[in-house]
Image (cartoon, rainbow over all chains, first blue to last red; front, side, top):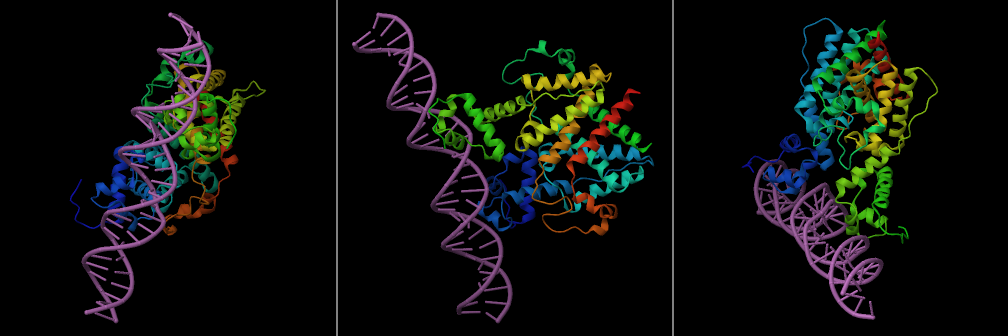
Length: 209
Length: 209
DNA sequence: CCCTCCTACGTACGCCGTACGTCGCAGGGA
DNA sequence: TCCCTGCGACGTACGGCGTACGTAGGAGGG
């Protein structure tokens, strides 16, 4: 695939893994394939990485580290939270195949804490501190994780939730669903994300008062 | 593993898959192993199921179908939403290994619609209808998906988010995080779930007014 | 000059999903 | 009764996988 006279490095290997993950998803990563892409023998990778699981972890960390801190010009804590949430969404959309990876992993290291710290700063701005702030942050993380999983990670082969892969459903038994069947089948992710985001912010506001 | 004189059936195969998933997770499922557990030849399974992916889908549907409708004795829409959310959480906790499976799949069929319908009924009770109700439901689903993923699907080998798998982090750079490091490392899932749930309900209440 | 150590690599084992061919049996005409 | 057809069960085989293990070669220090 490439010349690659330069020697094998953990960095080069992780890079290749990240590229492959972004291009074809985690399930496409194999040691043999990675090695081939680097023009190296399969087993040579094991001189730099103990096993595949760790390699994937490293790739996840690398992607997380690429996350840019958001920027916003406002004193309103709400604007900060909005900007932060949108930045996370951007990350998810830029790396859709990697997002599931990040989502099911406990992040740590510098990159993880950078995000946590800036989230805590926002809640601090809003007047939430200590245990409460942690709770808020986690609720927010949960919401983000959930929406973005739904936006980015659910199988897109089907047009919508109303289509059943193995046989149709008799909608007569579900009148309310039938009434909104059009909406159930359609996803406007931008609009949904903002709607949920404002909902969360409204909840925080209410908690403040 | 068992006598199993009775003939192979799609039902029996899916049952075995569900049991295996619940016991050891999706990644433990293999056609050979499933067949062995059923006392049958590997390839015999293919007479009843086109391939492994479909088999896993069928298992996911089966698990979803087992979900009991929640019960609650109240006229308050908030209580209904609470009960519904807690029922979903129960499902996730009873089938932790299967939950990730359900989460990354677009559900359809009867079972999926039963849940959707009862959620819509609750939002209807709260005064939300049509498009708004769908948006609310999706926000709620996102939150549930997110918290429960965090509760049930993140790797439990590590004690908490503060522990880094590959090297420690210098906390001096993260003063706010350092201040709540104890809370960051500890998870009280019951309390967190209820906290987030009330947050969501508060948001809905506010939207009503 | 030799010894040590590190990296690269080939081979091999035990898994995996599944395409394909065969065999045996049950059931229905003739 | 015999035979044919169809279907379920199964064995074999192929191409993939992760990785344990052994080896070979070269670089650097004694």
